[in-house]
Image 1 (cartoon, rainbow, N blue to C red):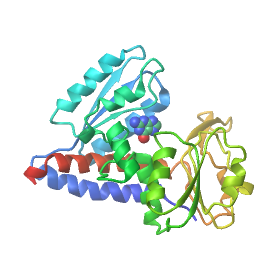
Image 2 (cartoon, helix red, strand yellow; image 1 turned 135 degrees about the horizontal axis):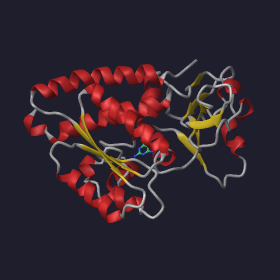
Image 3 (cartoon, protein in one colour; image 1 turned 180 degrees about the vertical axis):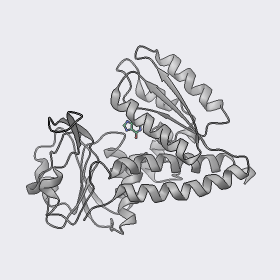
Length: 290
Ligand code: GUN
């Protein structure tokens, strides 16, 4: 059975629309500031999708598009402007950044209250020790909300995650640990990844390797979350490519209980959660006016 992230993300956005209308009546409009550096086509596509979601919901958005050769100081200056901008409640820096930029310096210059992706050091620390957490990285929160929506228990489950990025695998592992799961994290040095996925109740693939997880990597009736979005050549398609996940969907789907499709699984959930966290931060910042 499919874990349908598209349907759930639409429901989340519909609920947000109502909430935003209530805020607008009080003269409060949630705002999202986005920094996009360079010409990475995928990053541009993601930022356009985020901007479009803001427009659909009535969230104000401001996007700074900066060239590849920009200095770290100028990026940080733009963030400081957004930190002080009362029309902006959430700030995100689209990743990856060019190699000459120290990513964590940039992320840590976002005021922690406005750090809508939860990637700054303070929000990362709060998540780590499960203390006063109100902002989480959007993709991990999207995965957990999707699993919760389908009432999939996490407590005492064996979960294997392939991929340990600060954006997805690492924070997701911590969130799942806090929900009582036993988590195995695989990285590029893991000797036999298949051995770790074969016995898992839930497999989460976020490694960026197209269709890596095959049916003999997973247990019957297990649950598969595919976070990868990879372009692979497809001469039959008009565009010359198609999108696939880190799981070989057609090969795996009949063996498992639940699986997320690509596209239409975790991708739309990430955007819906970004919108939700922007509104949540806006409410927190304006709590005295509510
Ligand atoms: N690059 C790819 N996904 C994401 C995301 O969710 N947030 C940010 N900031 N950058 C990304």
